[in-house]
Amino acid sequence: MARAWHGSALGRLARAVQPSVTWSDLVLPERPHEQLRDLVRRVRHRDRVLGQWRMRPGGGRGRGVTALFSGPSGTGKTLTAEVVAAELGLTLHVVDLATVVDKYIGETEKHLERLFTEADSVDTVLLFDEADAVFGKRTVAQDAHDRYANTGTAHLLQRLESFDGLALLTTNMHANIDTAFLRRLDLVVHFPAPDEARRRTLWERCLGPAVPRADDLDLAALARDFDLPGGAIRCCAVTAAYRAADSGRPVSTADLLAAVREEYAKLGRYVDETRFPTAVDR
Image (cartoon, rainbow, N blue to C red; front, side, top):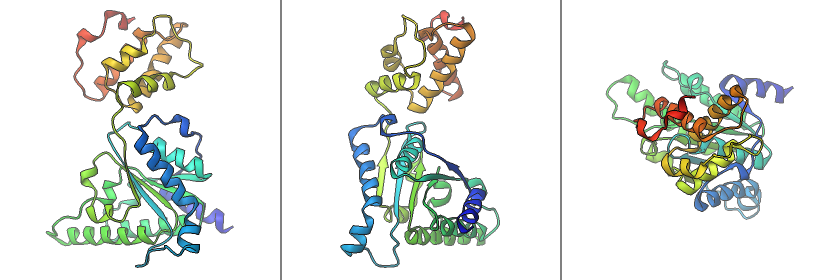
């Protein structure tokens, strides 16, 4: 009964995700890969290191592990959180910041206190997407709202330290995270935009082995000519697959180019029409 109550309460502030991805789904450089392995080691062996070997820090620190995933949008930060949860055999709870952050003074702290308390009682990973909305830099206090906002940030930093679980945070803007918070983290993992070789791998992964491909498919050219992150490449692959399915034929380079053009427009990036042959209109 207690577990059901906690799950219900968590459900009001976070979205539960049952992980369905593995390490093979990640396309990252060697350094972040090794940092993520280190993150898993910390969670798995903390009883031995902090308990048996008595390396637990003082100052009210809990046994929890905290990490920040930093990098441009679409570089795989949220996907990685799911991979880590899957590796540990845990559920992932994505915190809905819209329900946590409250316009009324003091309410945000209450929401997060409830969230941390209940997450301590169940086996789960907490993911704060776009964490700078909650853990952003404190400002010079100009009025009562500023003072309460700074107090709230300080409270969150302290509560995170006493958390006994795994808390992951993501940000597209590393510079916006409060430096006092960064010092309390166990790991900061940077997710760079993919280079040409990794973009080529991403195109292959996103299309997958089951999608029929036309003979003219040139993924190497797409990887070379368009500097898209993994999330955008995934969107392009799906869009192209729908075009091909509607026409009853394999996915072609023209389908993918049409999808890339749409993705550039969606992202507000300049579209050089000379890079797209007229064939993409078919």
